[in-house]
Image (cartoon, rainbow, N blue to C red; front, side):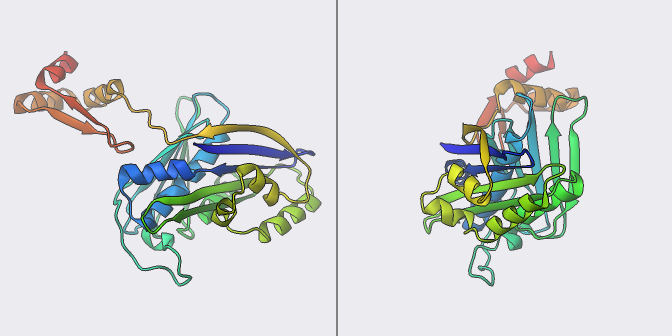
Length: 289
């Protein structure tokens, strides 16, 4: 099971959230049977969603991140609850493309750069908050940073990483987000910039055995920190037969009548966990009533 932690500077001018999402991303790979590059792409987006979800205040709040940059992966979606438990889906799970010019998995190549990143926050209001910004890099971390600055006017630093083994299992996954709060002193900003510039990649730190606490402190080196909280996180899908029934009802009477007249069972598969819900014609009749 993964872990997520939050720290704030003693003067309250900046905070950092860091997560180890190795198990979570590993579960996504097992469910969706993703190729290496798509495991990296979806894992980065899920890690971002997990940390952004953990920032939400309400117990029943949730956040959805969606990207489609026109790349071969198609749409990528990651959803997290307010405890950082995330789930994800990629439209085209298996994409095989060459490594990038640095010899790394080409996340930019599979995601694409011709599109938008959409952020939807369900925080108990009549309508969810929806923000969007253009995809500027396709590497996801830079796109999350740009979203915070452009859409929420919050200076931020985001780092994400997924290391995939030769057998396609996940060796390490995680990330951190630093945000500057209003009136953050220049001295604090300078220390954060210096610390971030000297950091190793997230997966390198995790592979060395560093915990989310270690990563958070390294990212804010030179600053006095107070720990806000920590929690365990996992891949968690909240689908249920009741929710699927509601979805079927929402398709309308004519659609339900067509399902009944076919005489065949109706199977509905959850995109996030691949669980299949089966409904007989008699089941559909009950929904019609």
